[in-house]
View 1 (spheres, one colour):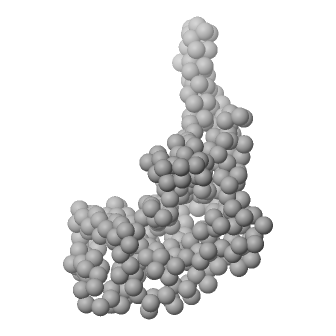
View 2 (cartoon, helix red, strand yellow; view 1 turned 180 degrees about the vertical axis):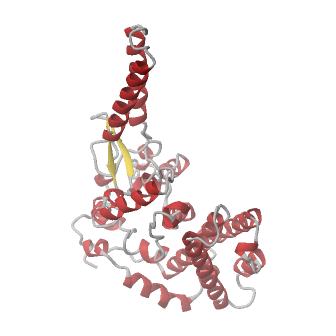
View 3 (cartoon, one colour; view 1 turned 90 degrees about the horizontal axis):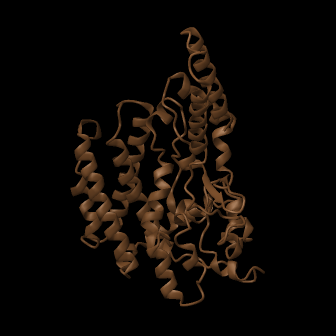
Length: 370
């Protein structure tokens, strides 16, 4: 807001100087200038207040505050990096990234999409910036929270109504939620990495982060706030499903972003290519755990991608491969949720996944005393 006011003062000063320079200052009626300034100020004010008012916030006075029913989950969030992520753009490292972009005359890149949630406080009629929050993953809540709050009455009907109005529920929408994770954790801004030297989130792995940094599945503890009941453990089958799903989505999103590269042999292209190759190699290893023809979906992976030489392939070919992998991934996930556990009948994977989860357990799990 301060920068907007400074820019406005500078604009008015330049206008006055130009009018003086051309001998026009005394020739334009003062009420014309006042009307012009009013319209200019209105435009700046409208721009400053431009905000998606569907975001109600995790812990505020709005109807439907998440804390009201999900106290333990909010405590976990407050101990996570997501909670304080809105501060990152103004940190020393954030300012250095912005300075490098500015010196290279790169068009300003918004940090809000991946670092913050802007919520609208109706009673105060103002906005508030918080970190990456519940609504960042589950969608802005204005359209679905009234159904979500009626959880105990007509349970199944209200759950369905909430989902029809945009609520992303992990048990039914893990694909869509996971896509949101990788849209930020692959850093989809070429200049931000190549010029700004922003890190690329290369250590992100979906299963371990969902069971550590952003631990979920705490509804039992939310209902019994004394903590006398232990958090329910995610089944091995579901952990394996999330692990495979994460690898497929990382591969898909990596290819999708690679198709839009403007510069080859850049730091961003090198890092993106490395992650695409790593996710593909991980998927090949997973495929080898299956008996022959046991999972035709992953058997099709090589056929879809072939020996896709990224640097030699056209953007259209790469985008087509990403779309095909997206269809494969959605089909894999839908079949799992419909009860097909043969897709995740891979006990060999469990040890590796559990080790990843243990390695990334963070303060969130300490809140639960686990």
